[in-house]
Length: 159
Image (cartoon, one colour):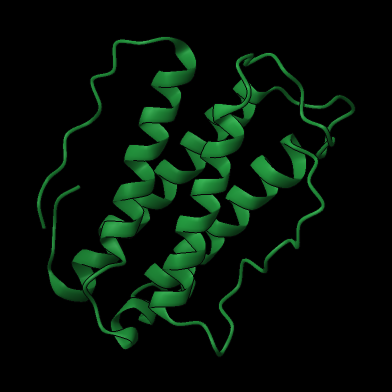
């Protein structure tokens, strides 16, 4: 697996956060690509976490934070759990679609202080800045998990 470089963005805050988020999203999709369906579903840890499960969870998170919470869209909130009919192809396609929609929402919002349309677990709606930082944190956490699981599945290392 090729090692990809951290983005060295010299830009405003929004562009920098988005570049890091896109870098991490790409890392997730690379880790879950090029394996058999059995391998991408294989768990090597007691919790049952698999590469495909991580992608499915991140699809849910992208949809919930950008579309449902921030934009206030009435979207079907996808399950974060693997279903019997899920395939690597379908789960990765759904993740890519959620990322595309998230980025479209980001493209149309210039103010990181803009508040979410819906509140989530707090008294006040959170800001787009908070959502972006949270998504970098959430995706980075799972990219690290994906690094370890992929290495355990087939020995591939690298970002």
